[in-house]
Length: 140
Image 1: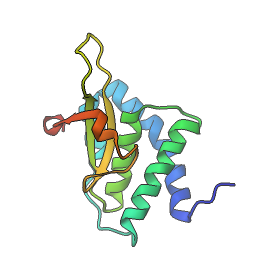
Image 2: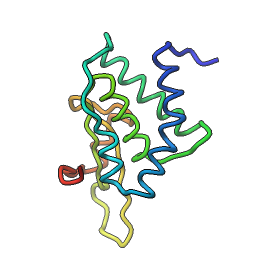
Image 3: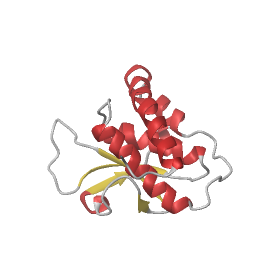
């Protein structure tokens, strides 16, 4: 059995529902609606160890995305994590980037991740060395 705290089990169960839901929003309503869903009003922090919890929640949601009943993409798992963080009073930031140093082609391989105060939560720490992020301010 997984060695998870109660808050991490809650996150896991929430992710099992949220990941397919964010997929439906993206497919039927588009990115702007999915981003709006993720950007719930910032709750009053109800977690004592915010950073540690945020990192573990990112790990849990990634685990559900990779091994759960519903496989998903980096954008979907990042939007789900962003909403979960905000609902727990932590102001994560959605980052979307394009590969650094690759030639422009007809297909774009973008990547998404969440940062909290500049620290990557749901990806490798060096993701910022491989992807140049761009501003999404006009998306919500």
